[in-house]
Amino acid sequence: MNALVPVINSVFKGRVVAPSACITENASNYFLVEDSKVTKTCVFVNHIGLSDIEIEQGYFSVYNSNLRDIHLWAIDGCFMSSKVGSRCDCVLFTDTEFCFVEFKLKATSNHPKTILDNREGAAKQLQATIELIRGAVAGQVLFEGLQYEAFLCSPPHYPSKDTSLSDQRIEFLETYGVMLFEEREKHFS
Image 1 (tube, rainbow, N blue to C red):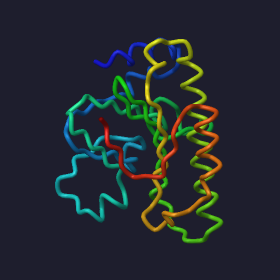
Image 2: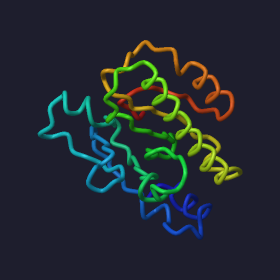
Image 3: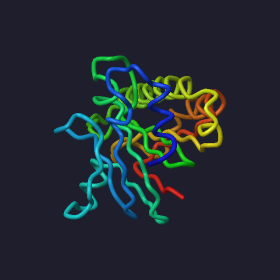
Image 4: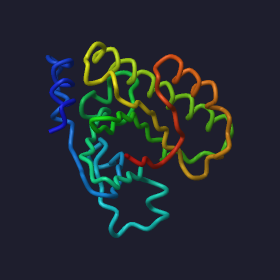
């Protein structure tokens, strides 16, 4: 088990759902994460049988060339009820990296204002979760040397060269020390 899990359980002791009840792990070299319609939480998914188009449109791809244990902490719908405030969908982590992930892959509108609103809303959900978790683990030595990242998973039809997240990227980095990416994949080192 990753040494971060007992610390996470400790700092969130007394919550209705213990974080570890929402944490699973995978050490495959490539797998997917889905915000499942069935479980209403984020889950690991095997890519076998899925087309590249299906993967691009509905999943977050995880590349794990060193076969590290990657933990998936389902935040929305497991650790936190869907009825409780704004938060991101999940966190992916190892002993050196901690990645907040928000899915917006089901967004269908091409309208620029809707796209902007979705991006800003996702950034707020990521911020709220970063503030919650970083506040809870403040002073915990194991969390001090981690590389923190945040991923907004937008649908393929969103413009990729958009600058609407520029201010949020700067704020994330300056305020939280977290790099913000609009990507549908993560390469763990």
